Image 1 (tube, rainbow, N blue to C red):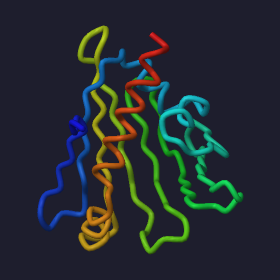
Image 2: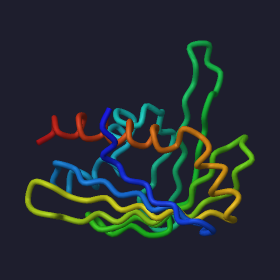
Image 3: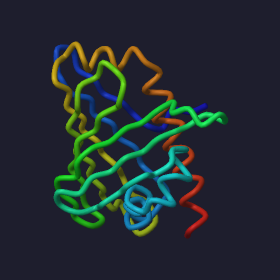
Length: 155
């Protein structure tokens, strides 16, 4: 599988930079991150809450067939500018990872393509490095591939 999502993690830095170009207009890419039904389709999580406004919050979860929670994440949304950016926190519950700060920037390349740039800031270099030890890169690339496929059907 081609890795179209690029991850940059410079040594001794607390951040990760994620970039991906999509064959989608910027408004559809933005909707993929802000409409609960669309988030569920490409992310594979249930959206329990998604308030896309200043001081809003969100909560996602995944359960197994027996109803046990496998994954839960939440955060506070600090800023949303339609088709431009989202600033939010991200916390995976029941893990040793502390809260992260995320800056998502949406950029139109032309009428049919757009670019997503995510800057994630961790509490420490060690926390960032521990995240990179997980199959983080493969997971986000797979999710972005699914986003492209699901949202392309809306064109």
